[in-house]
Every structure is written in structure tokens, then in C-alpha cells.
Length: 159
Image (tube, rainbow, N blue to C red; front, top):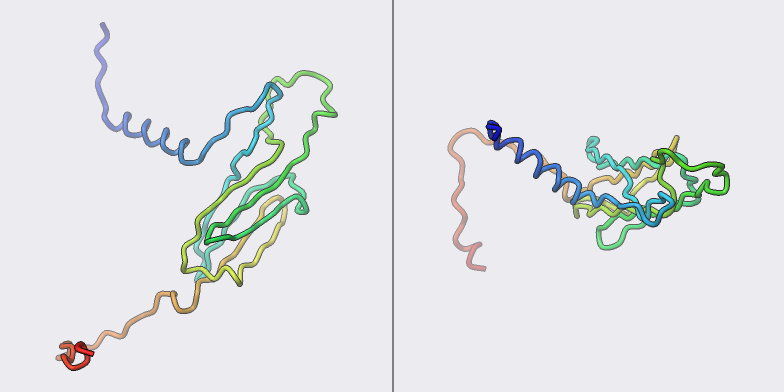
């Protein structure tokens, strides 16, 4: 019998990795040809000033094969990549490039103005910028110093 030191943080890290893979919805190969059906697109979501910017990595994808839609505050990116199985002259020893259909959905916060969204596709990266809604942007409040009237008028609260 081997005595091993138990480290609870290793177990927590392992559980976190399992939840991460479950959350990302990693795909399993379909069939024996190695194609990935419905593979997930890697995304970066960045806050830049008063905008939220989504960067989707789509190397080798023709922009005409992409579809971007927003419905009920859910951004969905769909597309299709061609398969190069016609050019296959031997058996793959390793195949990591995804082919077939793909999609990715992302719930957007209601603080974004989806009507003014701007898209750009350059060098295999789809960029979608969402400005924040003017009324929902953070605003600075002035700080009054000294004795101020902080009591709410009772006549106004009864109405």
C-alpha cells in the first residue's frame, strides 16, 4: 500500500477542469472520419471603454459561409467549413483542424445596444462590437460634503 499525501486543491482543480469542459460543450468526433459536428468557436469577450467586443477565431473560414444573428439577447455565430476529404491521399495520423458545421451562442447583457452592433472579419477573426446603451452606462455621482438634506420628503412618498 502506498501512502500519498492528500491535497484537496488538486481535487478542486480537477473538478473545475471537468466543469469547464462541460460548460464549453466540447464535441466528440462523429463517425470514423474525424469530422467534428457542431464544434464550438473559441471566443474572447473584452470590455473596451463603453463597448463590449467579441472576438471569434475562425481561421480558414470564408466570410460568406458565416451567419451572425441576435435574438432575445442571444448572439449566435453559425457557419460551415469545407472538408478537404476529396484531397485525402492517405490515412490521417493526426487531424486537429475542424471541418463541417459549427455554432456558438452567447447571452448578451441587456446593457448593450444590439441595434448599433458593428462586425468585421479580418485574418480569420470575426469581431463584433456592441456599444453600451446610453441610459444604462455607469454614471458618476457628485459627492456633497457637509450637512446635507438626506431625509426623504414624506409628502412625496405618499403619492
